[in-house]
Image 1: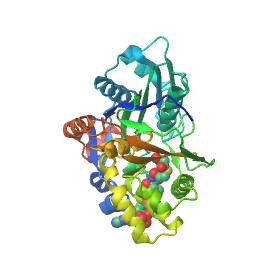
Image 2: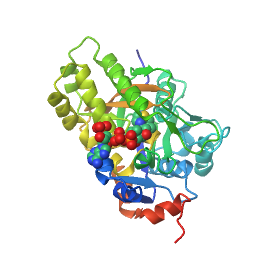
Image 3: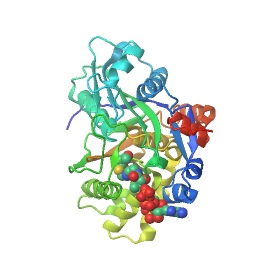
Image 4: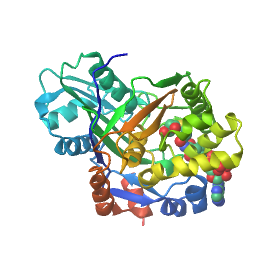
Amino acid sequence: MTTTPAGIASIGLQLPPLFMPVTELAELRSVDPNKYTKGLGCIDIALCPSGDDAATLAVGAAKRALSRWNGSIEDIGLVAVGTESAKDMSRPLSAWVAEELGLSGTVRSYEVKHACYGGTLALRQALEWKWSGAGAGKVALVIASDVALYSPEDPGEPTQGAGAVAMIIGEPTVAHVAPVSFPFSSPAFDFWRPVGDAFPSVDGQLSLDCYKRAVTECFGALIGDRDARSVLAEYQSMCFHVPFPKMVKKAVLHLGEHLGWSAQEAERLYLEKVEDTLEWNRLVGNAYTASLWISVARALVGLEEGTPITAFSYGSGYGAELLHLTAGPAAAAAPWVSDVDEDLRSRKPLDMWGYETLRGHARAS
Ligand code: CAA
């Protein structure tokens, strides 16, 4: 297939200004902290102050991606926001972003929803718009932004988080994305949020099973009839959607078992290619659509041009897609690291009382 070269030209991240260690939540909920740290692999939950939301995070990430990109706002012909934290059933989150950026005119502006997969779908649509020539020389601004909150005392509470990743889709200076990808979907009620409900409903065990099945299907399609060991050895890193870090390890071990590998060999694959990509996710928690792209942003840091990585996107409901990326010349310097450093350095810790106040469940003293 002959296509116009396109990929990720710039990345910006925005993390919220508050966080709480999961050990603090464990104390609040009278749970052994090892369940959250060792059982789920979490460290911190990133939290937004009241008044901030997915639009605030999306705008922050977009401004950072634009600030280190050579083009101008007039070069943007498409703005798409993947989110499951919509502010409105009709008005797209992209309208809040466009308003803040002063983006209007011959611009396609919309929101994409498919649980945590929405950001990847927005990215794929923007790439396909570029590759097809429909972009007519313009670039796209794609943002994955979410605030993940569960109802207090829900088993998902320690996996909460928030964050946004913005990507300019144009010249593949940060990363080239291969036109061929490996999707898989199968309708299920594993995790859903009915219209009007503030928090999601989850069938925890089913959600784990759906995620693991999607991993084996997508990687099975990538591997095809080739030797799995040599296919996976080609990749420097393997990035995943991160609902909680232990989920990713479970999925890699499951993939190994599916491929007929020993547990030790699958564990080695996880340690060599996956563990490091989770560094930022452990400090942020689940940021739904942004989680995979936080992991990809981490994995690209310092890579030599041409180094390949995989990115596995999963969205409940459920749909998944495995992408193949190669680092561009800007990955070596990775200027987006300063976004994460700055946000992690300046964010303020909440203790259990601060958390309860934030969630509107302050105890009478
Ligand atoms: N010390 C060490 N480990 C402990 C422990 C302790 N004291 N107590 C428990 N554990 C371990 C358990 O053994 C378990 O580990 P294994 O699964 O390896 O056995 C782990 O801690 C978790 O314990 P439970 O299974 O008992 O936890 P739970 O049932 O209370 O909650 C959950 C787990 C269902 C995943 C819950 O966090 C949840 O509902 N999360 C939201 C749904 C989710 O993230 N699903 C993932 C796939 S769906 C998706 O990817 C979309 C998305 O973003 C949401």
